[in-house]
Amino acid sequence: MHSVRKTHRAALISTLQQELERLSASELQVVSVCVVDSGIDASHPALAGRVSEAYAIHREGGEAKVVPVDVAANNDAFGHGTAVASIICDLAPNARIIDVRLLDERNRSDLTAMKKALQFVLEKKTRLVNLSLAAPHQMHDPLVRFCERAYYQDQIVVAAKRNLPIPDAGYPAVLSSCIGVDTQAFASRFAFKFRKRDSIEFVAMGEDIRAAQSGGGYTTKVGTSFATPVITGMCALLLGVYDDLESFEVKTILKALSLECR
Amino acid sequence: MTAAESPLASTLGILPRTSEETVLRLLLELGMRVVGAEEASLLVHEPRENALVFVMTIGRHESEQVLRGQKVPLGRGVTGLAAVTGEVQIGAPTYKDLDYAERVNEKGEPEAVIAAPMLKGDELIGVITAVSFDRAKRFGQKDGEVMMCCAMIAAVVVEQHQRLKAYENASPIPSGSPQSRNESDATDLEIVSTVSALMRCPSAKRRQVAALLSAVQAIIRDA
Image (cartoon, rainbow over all chains, first blue to last red; front, top):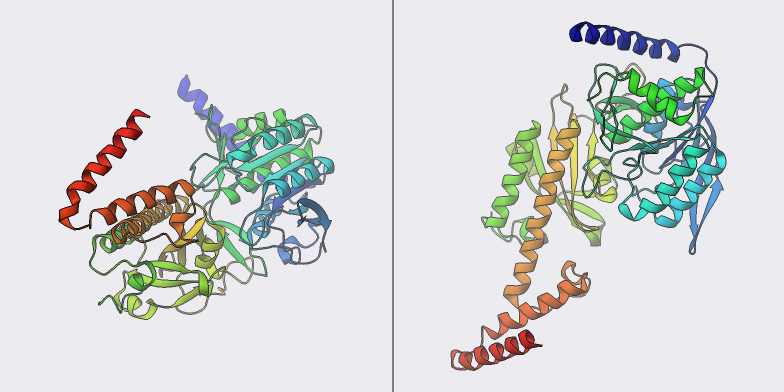
């Protein structure tokens, strides 16, 4: 009986994953995604017409300001955000990106700038927020407040686990009000796993995954930063069909679509 | 290789054929073998030049001859990016277009690279790298984690070497040095340096020094 149930479940998951692939090729409602990262090279052919707005967080004295930047230009400080955005757009043709450049050329930011970026993301009220970054424990309280508020205004936050979990797996990925993502290799980029009772609940394709390179060309990327937009892309596909899904419903559907729960 | 010829000696003060040099070489060897690379290198950060310099390479013999002393600007390539971001970076070839048919790589460049930064707190000490020239080779997440562990251990080796040298030389801690960044560390070093200097005093006075230190210890214990 157990093996029959497993066989049926495997067949159902296979069907549902094929459905995700089919969705990716069909007509869907537009879904806005805030990508808080190192900026995006919107001039790249892979992102043509996909970046609707672009901003940068500037520090002036002790304050941080959100400054609009040229949406058609290369705003990427070191190549990270472009790859992240291209993975989302590749999976979800209905995704429209709002570029929020927080990280500098050293992949760094500070508490003040990050708080400003999070406040801005809440104001934009995009359905999806991609955070391919892992903040230190000092950011715990502001990130809890951000994720809670995002949850109650139906914004789904997808965040990356720290690649090497020292001293911790990274914030906000470990928070339950957020979808935390780890990485491993899968045969298909539409395949992913759910880990029950783990602070990082989802594992997606982040090994040798194809992505656009800032400045032109294409490469393959490795890491949790690049597994995170895979889940963001899945969420965009689901919201493209069912735009009134609430955050917990999206998480539940993702769990049901996952290859295995343990 | 003599100390004068060794860039490791001139940058980090680690002499050839010492235990520290051996440990660093073993870490490179371990990392290289575990991740399946063909070559591994250690680069040290030269702040005055805003660059990394190759000080040790293992794997292909000719590479060590070619690479030793060569500089990589901070921020350039996978290695330079690991240095400025303080995070492991994994590099793969770049292709011109979506069918991933035509590569953009320059001839002779490795096909796959891992670069892991050696850090003491936020301070960059250097970077260790592992490379493959096999067109089919790609490094994965676990490989990056292995190299990061090797880099962290290498950073500890360098830091401990620098501390030991400071103690042995009973030298005052130069301002801005890694040891002086932490005030508590600086105080500890000052105490140990002083004791180290006292141990070099003439033997005739040693008994008096020992009695004095015992009295100080008793005062602190009873306080």
